[in-house]
Image 1 (spheres, protein in one colour):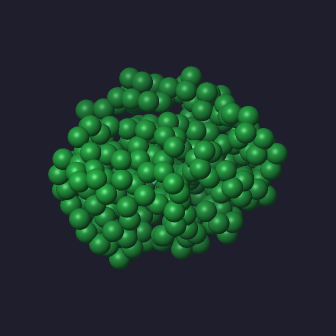
Image 2 (cartoon, rainbow, N blue to C red; image 1 turned 135 degrees about the vertical axis):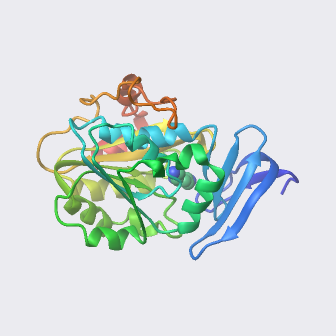
Length: 292
Ligand SMILES: NCCCN[C@H]1CC[C@H](N)CC1
């Protein structure tokens, strides 16, 4: 360990570790589920860390929150009811609230400490909770979905950590089935789906499961996040049987002007060109995603 530096060492990315220079540790705590830490970095703003894994930094969180949210919501004509699983920092809520067609935003986050810490140290991210359409449920997303009536939501966004720890079940088949049941015909799922550089085997399994469960379309898209392992991360974009969804060509453009407000600020990353580009994959990944 180098004094004054935080290194993200994990068995999920053996033999490599991204490091950030630490100016000051701002919070350290242990919730019922995980260790929670916030530090001021030298060049990426404040950083949220759960069990030693970087969840977000102020400087590059836009790349993840905007893409995981607008790739699904800009692919369907008129999203009204949206469910967020995980996402306790509030960043996805901030992005969902840019869509004026949305009437109801439910969020189910298992760890209340993540919510409280985000509100205290990341106000520009937790601003999402201020939207009156938001209802926060503290609990396990797996259990929450079992109580959701069939066909309730237009979109479900699963903003999870990695499949080691509390989020493990969010990568398994029964959970994907419960998401499909909660979606209307032609409804969409966007879920955190790891890195093609590090987790091709996990992606292979997720794609195979999604193809069995989601009879609309199943796609993998990606974004660049400098502070995530391998500098990129992807998402599974799936739709249930029903009105066709072509994820690669947004039908519901998010107009740059009315999508921002004083509190939310403008879009920093997402635009309709990068929406389409996000589904272009390198050959080694295309082989796996298209063949499953
Ligand atoms: N809303 C914060 C994003 C949380 N997503 C994950 C954090 C940990 C990473 N290794 C994978 C993405």
